[in-house]
Amino acid sequence: MNERVQALFADRESSDSDVAYQALGRLFEITERPVDWAYEFWDQLLKDLTARAGQKRAFAAQMLARLAISDPDGRMLKDFPKVAAVMKDEKTVTARHTLQSLWRIGLAGPQQKAMVLEALEHRFRECAEEKNGTLVRTDVVTALGRLTKATGDATIEVRLNALIETEPDEKQRKKQRAAWRKAIAWPAPR
Image 1 (cartoon, rainbow, N blue to C red):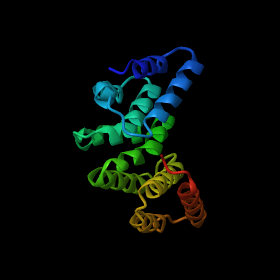
Image 2: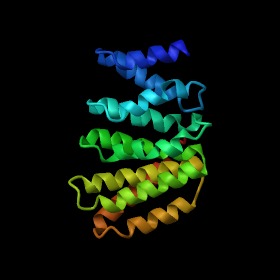
Image 3: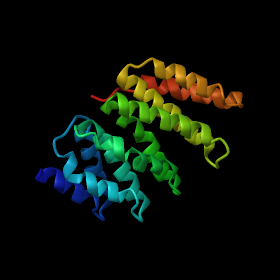
Image 4: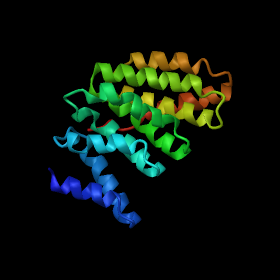
């Protein structure tokens, strides 16, 4: 087991918020590229998706999304519904962190990308009447933009434009298009 990574996971649980935040940043940095230790933490992260603490659920979803590129066995194909479920977490911040990271699963391969696209499109459609529906829709647009930027798949933009056109409020459509432009200008992962 990678002792340095194990130490970062332990630091992530620290009561010192600076230590925990630095560990989070380092783990996110390391997982920009495939790693060979994903399965050492995978099962625990899956369990943490239903942890009592929202912060723990969000971290688990974010890490699993990042580890999808390090999943040669294709576990994410089976586990995706568990990760995607956290997009609808009772805590808005937990749901948003998950939603904002979910696109990374689409970098793992064509099947994963198809699942992510379907889940994000579904989330866009279903959230219209929710309390934070406009925020969710903007996050979906941003996630789709980041997936487009990272994969170079221009067909995502066509699908997204169709979604945006379902938005009845012109002001919100403008905001969503602005979020799209900002997302595709964002630096793609290394």
